[in-house]
Image (tube, rainbow, N blue to C red; front, side, top):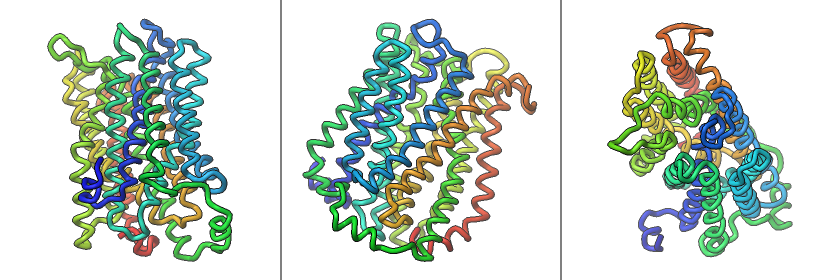
Length: 448
């Protein structure tokens, strides 16, 4: 992107480099993720042949590790390496992991999953932290900047899911070509970052000098306001867990729904099941600029909703999306394949909810956290997501049991399973709305 374009948009030049680097890393992460449970459950085309329940559980544990390890990555970056070095090391480990998964053996598959999770721990938290370091504490461009950055996440997810999904599900190529494609994406991002970092990001994220370390050590204990803000941040993190538990059904139970119960034919072409996950980033890319502009415009007028209010809206939108899944599953329970529009509508509302929660949450972490704890608290933001990933996988493993009426019976069939998330979203939204005034007071004005 050229300098005039950057100046016109009013964002720091480094944002657009980090946008592209994160795009390629998410290309690799979401590309592999799109086909992971399908590969594990496949017994006909060289997959592992596990049951869907077992595949969902393994996916949950993988997601837990991928989002929990950023806590460790944040500590290492804060205390020793800096965000720059942590990001480079993480990217290299991620690429090695994907290339291990491209080798068609069971040991290399599990070794590759472990490496991707470890590398993500170093990379993910520090890329987001570096974006926050581009802005002053009360810079009104921050929320808009994080929303733009989040568009990079989703552009990468869209391209990765299309490319890796096509190769992985194609009879001509196969699963391991999809995993290898993810590795190529990570290498592209790493090379781009190493070549352009000094020019566009400067010394942001470098390992702190001894003088900087002494300044941070001399900063003293947290003030009362800082403690209050951290309490508010931890509470808000807790409210994100139910959202992601439901949202992350996309790569497990909704992925199997697309594969087995959705009419995927367009003429003579059968849409790969994994491509349905790309609906989410595609809609986000279209809607993201509108949300970013809206937050910025409302902020200038002093009318922007607080972060808890935005997240309450996110939970309601999520519940509406699962309402479409309930109806689609109910129709499918009567036999035959259902229209792809049910999945499309669900993903659309989930995406609108995501835009009200995820980029806004990343921005909030950098607003409320003292500088000396920035990477660590960003790690805890992702740790909350890791709990969601684990719970999401274990819940997805119960899909068939709920559908058979073994746990409870409402509509009958798989509609009962998706109704769980309607109740979860609405119930959490009501509780968060009730606590919003208290959370706003604890933040002492830094959220506005």
